[in-house]
Each structure stands twice: as structure tokens, then as C-alpha cells.
Length: 326
Image (cartoon, rainbow, N blue to C red):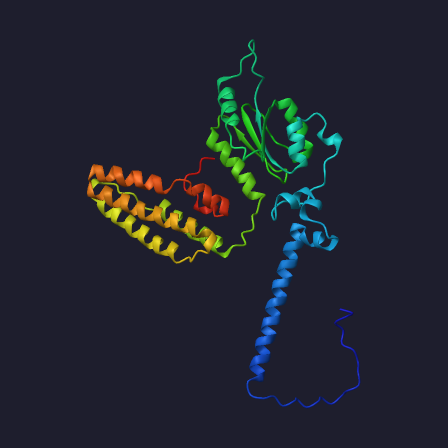
């Protein structure tokens, strides 16, 4: 209020407005609007850099890897946490200590006892242990280990009260030291989904390529339409449903073709268009009822899809991954 308080100054007659040529007023307004938009964008960029730690790195002249593990590992959703002392991690397995230090996602299987010849695990514990051993580790980026209820309590001061009161259980901890507990019998898919959720919630990958961003959006819309596609409920409704599916494939084939891929992504673009064509052909073969045609079209569809998931995942278009094995 002190700065906004009006000051008493001697009255001064306003100066006459300078004459402006026709069109100058509109040009000035356009320039002012552009400056305002630029200032707003700079403010947003500043907030993003401050949130991700890039601003401090730029000021100090250090790279992201030198400013902290959180900035080095991710670019967005990881919180700035205080480093852990030796007294806090004392007694924890080495893998968990390393995972906490490196801000890695880790999963802990909680079982009633170790597997011994004279003390066998319960059947559910053995099945969950087997499922956890086959969980996706994302090429070593996710740590998987096991513990007992007593030893698990040592993590409470670090990640909060777990409330694990039964075995078997699986505890998944994300990069922000936030834990999710899966109690009772869980299969490998459930464990993998919890790990994937923990990685997604604390990882934000910036996609700078406009084509990859548009490709992600198109694939997400396409798979949403496919998931919501109404399957036929009677034999008479099979052929009309297949015709609707073929129209859907035709529409999205045109949509993918309109993305105008740059040179380095033309291989992916061409293969995706081929997969959509083969998918439409397979649908048409099903509608025809010709078994030999169905078999040949299905074989061609599988051949056209070979290696596509890996290519789009490496490019950053993860929404286009069709067969998720993790």
C-alpha cells in the first residue's frame, strides 16, 4: 500500500497527443500484444525451470547431473527431497540404500519367512515371490528385493507409515519416497502396473519433436476409439461391426498419413501406415469368411508389426505401443 499510495505532485497540463499516421495504432497494439505474449511465455518458462532446477543449473554453469540426482534423472515431477543420512538407512539392504540415494523406483516383497528346507513359505507367499522375481525392472532402473515385516519397519521414518500388517504384500516406492502397498496374492501384471504407475507419476519426459507429440496424440485417440469399440453381441451383428471397424481404420489411416513425418521418422510413419492397412485387410478377410484369406491376412499383419513397438518407444511415442509386455 505504501508503493501504491498516490503522491501529491504539482498539476501539469497534459501534453498534446502526437499525430499518428493511419495504421500505426493497430501496429502498436499488435506489437504490445506480442510483447505481452512473450513476457507470459518467459514467466511460464521461468516457473518450469525453477520447478525442475534448470534455472539454478544455468546460473551456476553446471550441468543437470552436477546439480542433483533428481534433476539428472527426470525433468519434472520429482520433489526436491533432503538427502538421507547414514543413521536413517542403517540396517536396510544395500539395494534399497542405493535406490534411495539414486532416486530409483523400488519394489519390496514382504513374506512371512525365508524359504528354508525346514520352514517352507506359504503357497501364496511363494507365488507372489515368483511373480515379483519376474517383474519388469526397466533395464535395471527399478530395484526389486524382499523383506520381512520386522525389517520393513525400518523404512517407516523415510517413506512414512506403510501399514503393512499381512503377508504376502508388495510395496512399491516411487522417486518421491511415496509408497503403494499391494496386499495379499497379486500377479505379475498387477505388480508391473504398480511399478509403471510409480515411474509415470514421478517421471516426465519432454518431447521436443512436434511430429512425435502429434503422433502420441493420434495414437492415444486411436486406441481410445478401439477400446470403446462396441463388439457384436449376435452373429448377425458381426459383419456390420467389422464394417464399422474398417471405417475406423480408414479414418485413422488418413489421420496418420496427414502428420507429415520428417525424414528421420519416415520409416516409423511408413510402417504404421502399413500396419493400419493390414489391419483393415484382416478385418475384411474376417467379414468374407474365407479361412485361407483370414490366415494369410493375419500372417501379413503380424509381419508388418514386427519391431514397431520398439521403434516408436525409442522415438518417445509411447502412446503408440500396441503390445505392452511389461
